[in-house]
Image (cartoon, rainbow, N blue to C red; front, side, top):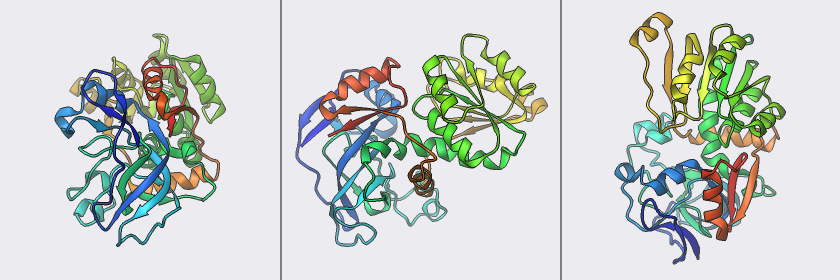
Length: 342
């Protein structure tokens, strides 16, 4: 099969011919990929930012936002069958450790793996090996390419919004910093789940135009005056700020946009957050980290997606155009999410 593989960090991946994956255990599932999202994390992987954390053996296949059709199942799989349309939670987890039993899949301490990020081939390929625990069954008429990026970008944004729902009563304000691949999903999740006033900050006019179309009440151009404009719109700072950028100083601007007793949810990464401790004490502010959501988050998000309340705005590329997709994403030329279609 064709697959996008990293051979050396800080160099473009290549499209290789490699063997198709095989079942390795009774709960394994082989999925024929119908759509694979291209994530900014893939750029970080290619750059080598994750090599000391996940330590994969090179070369390996990237791609952790995947949807498609069940091709083959292990002997113990009962929740899906061959031919089912599925979207895949990015981390197949053990189901037995305390974190899994509490529903916190991403903190699994058992036999978990992360295709496309850990030492396991991902989904920028024609086929992928995962497990039954990762499969969320979809309506048969769902096009996997339309929803694939919800498997990571979607549940990352939804997970943060879901945690913030009790804080966002009518009359509250939520600021979304960055209206790109994750941010535009976060805007729709906020609109679907809360009655908060939604303010979106981005430097790209097209992104702000899309934000208005999908639920933003106010938009602010990040032209150097964005902190003051947000403070004015929120009366001194927002109830909750969702920082989907969190690099190049944006993480500290998001802190300044957060009001007294407010919450800064950090979803992007790459920067370094700093703030005077007096600000924490006097302002009673809170900073919350967010990683990929749970299996239940993905199942709930798919209910919203299939009801038309969350729509993924995508730009599709053939698998052979993977390098074009990665370069376009790096250059900021993708509105919404880039999707590879084998």
